Image 1 (cartoon, rainbow, N blue to C red):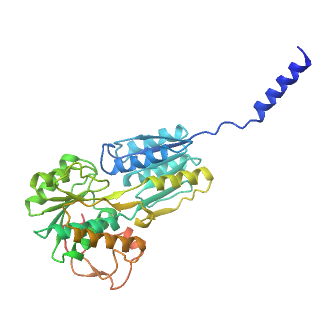
Image 2 (cartoon, rainbow, N blue to C red; image 1 turned 180 degrees about the horizontal axis):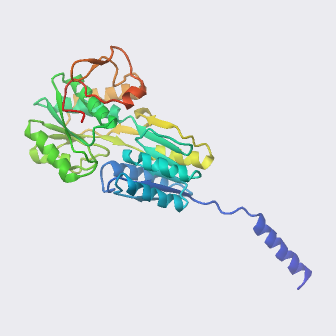
Image 3 (cartoon, helix red, strand yellow; image 1 turned 90 degrees about the vertical axis):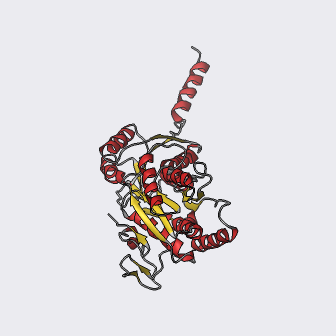
Length: 353
């Protein structure tokens, strides 16, 4: 072998040794409590997943319809063992299983949606959906004729209670006579149960149906009865075009990109995040043409006030069902008070159990 060939070969070997390894894609996993479908909570999160899946150097996957509890822990363990870099768990009941798994895999970043626990490698995040709930309550309060608004609700936890209260305050801002009747389903996703719950509210005179549920079942029940409805999580107008007035909606994509960038840059901090309309993480879907122009104008003006920080939804005085003052006149409650809200405001008919 000639000296020239040997030199060339040596140079090639050295070049291979010196060349940086191809950057590994960031592996991101998502865990959903319900089927993705084409509307609702998991659908909205999956739209956020698709948003970051388009980024260079990011690969995503998901597991849907994972029950809260041991099953979710198993799914998280599987992802962590497969060397996922970042795992999002998108339901309240995933909190403790995620904390347990996070402690076993310190090099993986974990993010839990709607909870309150953190660890060195686990953060939590949510959005101030109560802001959009308030606006949707304004729409419902303006559109009702019976002054009875029905609300199909999942579980009696602060997240849901807070949303019901904000919806009620919004309705009463434009219609002081409006009342909100609540029925608990004790499920996040059960289309048949949610639809039956809506029917029970229709039977007692509700002529606008709102929901904190993942399926469009309540929307369908409202349309079949010939009354109005307020969706949730995503625009549900396709399921009840003759009924659906608007919906408080999620826009997770930009936030998920923010987390991905932080993990890539080594700047991730396991802190609680609670963004509002000013960050675009929550919004109100476009209002239906069934909503009069003057009502839309009023709602959009209030949206601008909330987004700018000029208006705070729970500024006192706020009274509970018994008439007792829970938030004094002029006071803006701290986030801790809102996150622990366990009472209904005046005007809500139902129990927090």
